[in-house]
Amino acid sequence: MIQFLKESTFAVNEVFNRSWELLKKHYFSVAGLCFLLFVTSGLSNFLATTISDFNVVLSGFMAFFFMIMYFGLNLTLFKYILNLIDGNQDKKLIHCIPSSKEIAYFFGAMLSIMVLSIALLMILGAVSLPFLYLFENGENRAEIMSKFTVFVVFVAAILTFILIIRIAFYPFFIIDKHAGTFKSLRFSFALTKGNVFKLLLILAVFAFFQLLQMYFNYLEYYIIFIILNLVSSFLVVPLASIVVSVAYREMMSDYHGGEDPKILNNIF
Image 1 (spheres, rainbow, N blue to C red):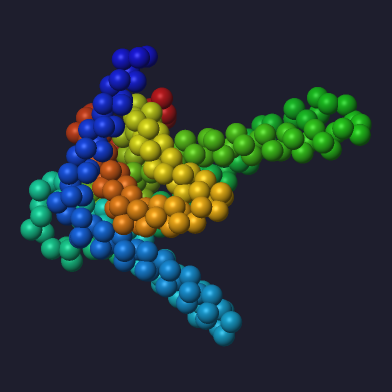
Image 2 (image 1 turned 180 degrees about the vertical axis):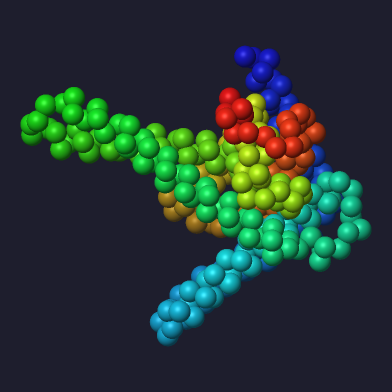
C-alpha cells in the first residue's frame, strides 16, 4: 500500500511538473482562452437575466446559445492544449474548434450523465425503501424516514461523484478520438480504471485552493480572498486545464484496453 501511494504521488507530481512547464511556455494563449470562457459565462448570465424581464423565449434562446459557445470554447481549449502536448505548436487555433457533430456528442454525453445520476438515486431509493418497514409504526417513524432519506441521498451523492470521476474524460475522446456519445463514456470508464486514486489526488490539490478561498471569505478577510480569487482566475484555472489534459495523455500512454471497451469489464 505504501509503495502504491509513493507511485501514485510520484505520477501526480510528474503531471503537475509537466503541466507547469507547458503553462510557462504558452501562458498567454491558454490564459486567453480561459479568459474567453470567463467572459462568455459572465455575459451569458447578464444577458439571460436582463432579457428575461422583456422576453422569456429570447432569454432561453440566448442562454442556449451561450451554453453552446461556452462548452464549444471549453472543447477548443482542451483540443488546443492536446496539440501543445503533442508538439503541434504550429497548428492554428481555428483548427481546434470542434465540429457540430462533436458538440452534439458532448451534449449527448452530458444528458446521459444526468440520466444516469437520476437513475442511480432512484435505484438506491427503491432498494432501500423496503428496509423502512423493518421499523414499527410510531412517533419516531417520520424522523427515521427523514434520516434514512438523507442517508440514501448522501450515498447516492458519493456514488455519483465516483461515477463522474470515472467518465470525466469523455470530452477528450470526442475531440481526440472522434468517439461518439456512448463510446466516449465507455472509453473514459476504461481509461480511469486503476487511476481513480491519482485523479483524487489531483482533484484534492485544486479543491484545497477553493476551500482556502471559501475559508478567507467566511472570515471576511476580503483582501486575501480577492488576491486568491485573482490567482485562481489567472493561474489556477489555466493550470487546471493543462493538468487534466496532461493526465489524459499520461493515462492514454498506459492504456491497454480495446477499441470498444465494455463498462462491466472496467468497473474495478
